[in-house]
Length: 223
Image 1 (spheres, one colour):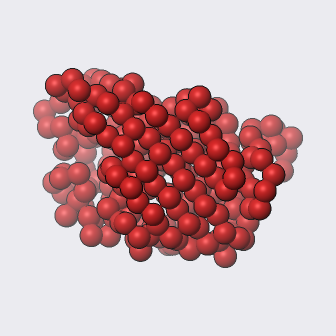
Image 2 (image 1 turned 30 degrees about the vertical axis):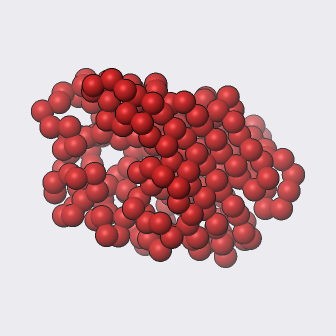
């Protein structure tokens, strides 16, 4: 690992199976945070509802769409709100992509809206965040620690399948994303516990989620 790579990591406190996270301005695995965020949403949206990790309460769908790729990161998922605990088994050597407070909006979910409108909707949603929390192993990160990781995106294309999530119809769509995301260094073999929470209050008439909270725990078995 180069000196530059070492400097781009924040070390977690000492402990069993400790892991590092990349700084927001770094290019982890050759991609910017924004590029990783776009790829995450393309993956989530590409999967039909019955196979989608977003609606999975146990972890049974966590590897779908990830086993057959050579991607350097393993995507964890949001849950659409509420409390979820998932158990997943994955291969060592991949980093984690953690959507602490994820948001995406497309012109299929908000028909007849301009690109500018979609960006305004995404920004308003994440401007309304009231709490952020992340714990990896024994290391906790508060809202103050995580605020630098907000990553809005430019427009990008997604393809919704038949039986898509978010009530979208099948086909391609223009999307934008915003939110708070974390990318870790590659995981070694072992067991990891990842806990992340976020909430927002956005009562205005054009808010997609007027009152939202997610509380997600992953028990990861890295082999």
